[in-house]
Image (cartoon, rainbow, N blue to C red; front, side, top):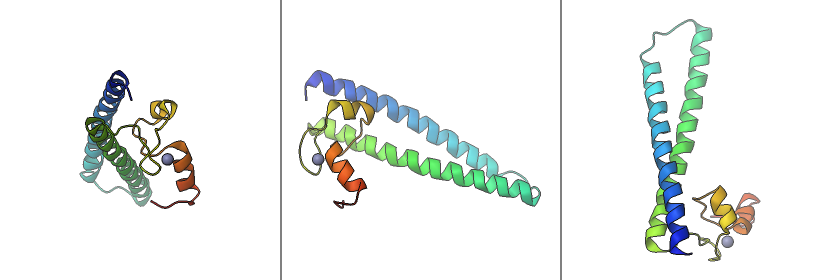
Length: 119
Ligand SMILES: [Zn+2]
């Protein structure tokens, strides 16, 4: 991939990273505040724990994306960015614009989703 394009993707990834870190920190703060709340009546409690679950799962998902972004940034430094980890073909730029931290090309991703190949 051209250097200029790489720099562009790097910028996108860094911006997304910052955005996610902020989001994760906000979620952390919210769930911490929840812990200090007085236990209410059972209905209130049920809603709170459901919300908490939601925040936790959201946080897990954000963390997962953060890890993928870190990976992608390392790949940029090593000059391996945009190359499918399974078949070694270039991942299309269209796909990278949509999922800048993509590790696999669309063909391999589809195979993974259909359980044709295992990772
Ligand atoms: Zn592939």
